[in-house]
Length: 340
Image 1: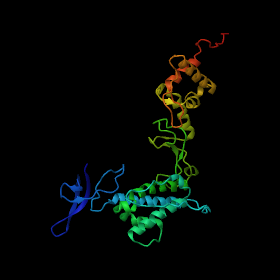
Image 2: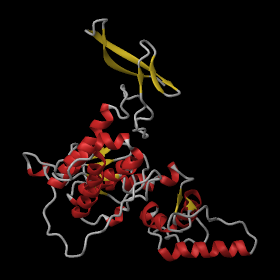
Image 3: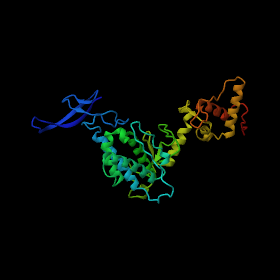
Image 4: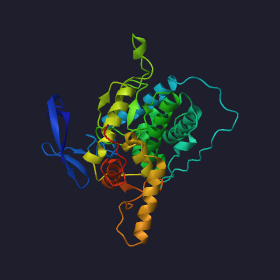
């Protein structure tokens, strides 16, 4: 993998001769420019979005990654600014003991972040640690303290808890947006286009810049009418529209996805909802199927796994065969109205 960056190339007198695009090649100890043999360190930010990449200098963090870490802090401050003030609870705040060592420490439990004050407390703890590491006075705004300590933290990963910090500060940003009512409102149904699980369909309280939705018309403010999928980015006009699409799509699943696995409850309440088959009938079918198995007869409804709640999963094609048999007017025992 190669990376390129631009640097000014000096002449013999040290004057600038123009832009020189570095062609960074990975080496055993970092990166080397294939043209001028300049060297660069590997950035300490090597997450799934960027992978290993050069900083372009001897520093251990590149400007883009440093700028992004600063933006994360600014986004937290912005979300807190949209939060509506509530008096601090008389219940004592959570104590966060932060023993930072080369081996790191346990992850922050988001369930313990119960208010904007908890967000501020955790940020303050990090800011105090950064200020102590940098050797600056622990005063001023917590966000400013963190910003001033980012370069030190990136170059002292073990002492600063850099990797833990980056993980936690993103969780705190999410929590701050939640308390400020900026997070999207999630819908229960799956996406009818890409099949993403429930929760992928959302309506937005904020715009693309995480600012509360505002507009010249009342309908442009507050919760968006539009529904979008966070998985495939498809959009629908409103809730009635997506409900209609979901009902139509789900009803066709036995034909379009016969091997899909569902619980009996989902089959009754959603896939075969329009057939009006009572819950007792589904249970009776399952009971008879088990009786057939005990008699050595092949089953019609074999379990094909279990969902996260432990509910049995069945193949849609197996369920569809029973439904079609029940609704077949020509089957034996079916009452047919006499022609008049």
